[in-house]
Length: 465
Image (cartoon, rainbow, N blue to C red; front, top):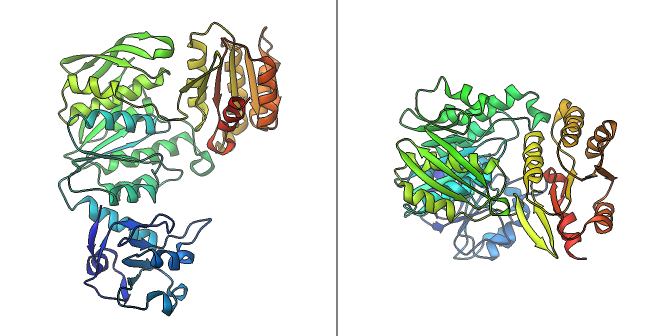
């Protein structure tokens, strides 16, 4: 974790020392007064639903060594009285101060950074990469989905001197966000998993999404490496003009890292052969979902770029731990539930439909979906198109929850296919009631929707019965 003195903060964030000694030391950084530890630096971040200035008293009472704030009016004299009171630095932009401190910590010790972005598969790919890298290097990685303008700095600030490689996930919803994250993290290796429709409320078109994701490749120095999905035309297009080293991966197109002999092992995942330049690696991938083969290939390409042996990379993938709500299998009273409820967009919905259609089950297949959000002007058409794709699959029951998801049901009804059964509902509770009436032993249920729809609630309610 970051350690320093008040004077170090002043030099990094360009603030003004209001109270305390410039020689006073701190150890670690926190933005949460509930979890702050003694001697940590408390940075008052202002968000849409919170303001760290309102919790200054609690942070100081818990032993904060220092405070970075923007508005000293929140600071009363009795908060900082006494011999062990914290130093106080005023910064015009406390978020920028947090980010600048993270950038400072990034460069303090020898350290290589792998940055991962993409429309789908970021978190899974990040975890697979970290699992491979951990076989050789002490690794720092993004925890959970802390992949934004606050989460990424906090990850870097948790870095210890012994960490040799960092694997950082970068999320975004608007242009310029990846650029800023890259300015902080200074990536040596950049991975763009794929590019498809998403976040169109702000980005409007798929070309806007491409440009925003491409900010990662633009940030890589000439000594760095771009990991390129050769089967994704939009990623491949971004890589054409790059002067950095490129490592391609794919299944369909000839690539530096390529999968072949792919075998679907049902609920056990996949086995395949990976050609990694002149090496051949046998991979046992315990995750279902064909898309995870691409995530694994990206991880292998990254591992190779860091000099990790084929044997260790294979072991790293076998050690990968499943992330909750990403094709997570739950077995309950003879029924298989596939919890893929973390998020959704048109491409990930298609992947989910493929996963369910190919899942080896003795019973019926239930697709339970919520709204796909943040699709802008394409929102209605994307839901109608999904309905047509479901008609062509071997799904037995389509269950929708929400106004946009209902468009999927309406589209499917216009092109009836026996024996597809459709249940269209407004609430999670109604959907659970339908499932309780229709699900039998041997059936498989896949649940998916955008984050705002909280489709995991359906699973929680179903498991209570």
